Image 1 (tube, rainbow, N blue to C red):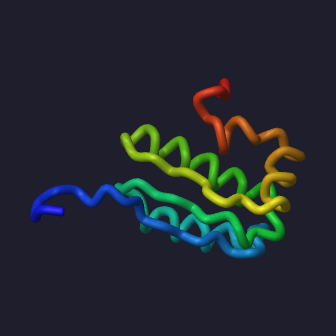
Image 2 (tube, one colour):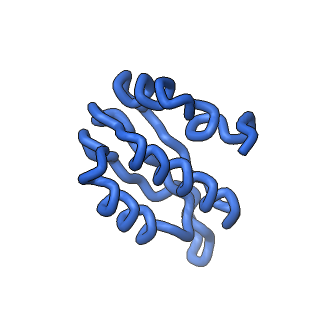
Length: 101
């Protein structure tokens, strides 16, 4: 990569194993610090995902899109996929282009 060219690889963040109410403030703070660039979230270690943290992730996804950046969840664990599906949020977190508000 030449000097002055943007870095094509996104920032990466491994999500915590427990994303419940107790983790919500920390997750929001961490995501706020990472705004302004593309971001890949590794969900492979998530064992518990609560509604509050899911709401933060969906909000972050929309914020990134509004600012012209991508935020993707990669390697989502079975627990994470199940929690997102149970809360009816699969299209909002994994396929936002298919979601209607």
